[in-house]
Image (cartoon, rainbow, N blue to C red; front, side, top):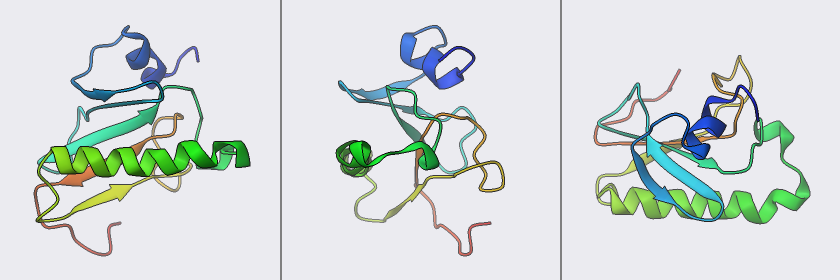
Length: 114
């Protein structure tokens, strides 16, 4: 998608510290980390946000969570715990219009989050 920073990262036009890539997803370190471990997991296909998912995306969204769980384990976050965050829309905190899941860990998380 033209003008989408995450699509540019997927295409290699913008550098990122990639941690995982398969036929559907890319994971990379957040450039403004909010925790000692802060990774973004995105679908390679441009999906603007949660509200743009369709029933045809059910398998993809399930695999998104499973992939994120595997990445959290690979980062050694299993024992102490971690947090997944998906923001939707501007008031929900979504800053980039490309579906992405935050994997946060390495410190005690607080509640409420925001």
